[in-house]
Image (cartoon, rainbow, N blue to C red; front, side, top):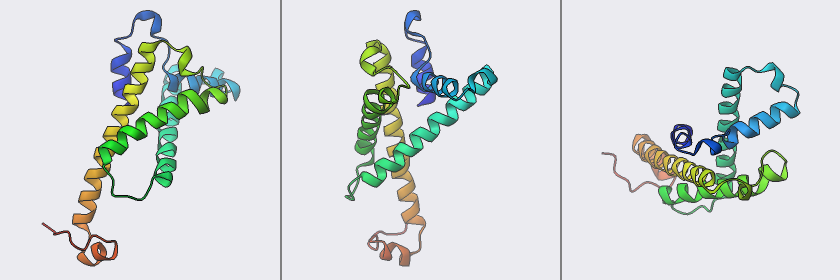
Length: 156
């Protein structure tokens, strides 16, 4: 997601190449905490990446907890996950907390970039989860597969 955002950012018109939301949010939070003046550019970049990863991980855990327990289509769930995170974050939580202007106040191309980045992230996450699950069930002993409802899978 981060690399995709950086790649697409360079394609924006110059007047729209102000910091992307993860950086804007990090700058706002560090300013509010009185830490911004102590961070150089490299430290701000690292802090932005860590904060964005932590936020994304937390939303993933919350969404997994809320998701219905049905056989998943990971790619579809990933697309929905990415879109839901964007909507809740950029139209809800971040503006309400005063950390970012709502998406409706940003140029359409920037919103398109961020929506696309969240969809890329969701699909990537879905594909990784699908591969991980396949690897896990093939790797578990037959007794564990039976215990967790996967007893009919063959172990190729």
